[in-house]
Length: 162
Image (cartoon, rainbow, N blue to C red):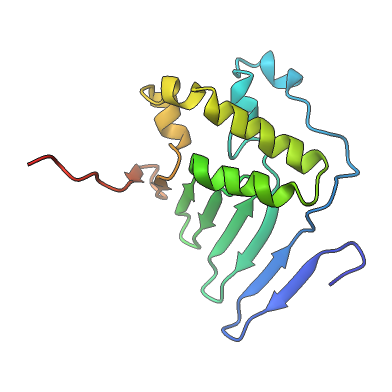
């Protein structure tokens, strides 16, 4: 544990885990207004993976794979061969983040609460049929981008009616 509150752990398999403290941020709060002139929807400024979604943990595996966890619960996996995979949290997982951050408070709680409001507003359901929404990743679904640029989505398949 460093003086700034960063925690470093080296696990028995050689994995290095770096965690940031969940404390009220002393830095300037994220302001989405500059993004609005760039054609970004106001709600898009508070989606998982956006600039507001801070990295809170990073694991570097012995194999060279880097796993990042963001404030929203989004998981990003970077492979040494250039493959990049990510999964956005479900609404239930994001609600769990809100409950956990209520104990700490601060700007991070405000950011996650705003993300939760975007999820609950129906913004994702309305946009989920658009190519841009599918490219960004639907909640609970894995997206994988290979080195050649091909993108593959992975999602649970619902049971078909008989």
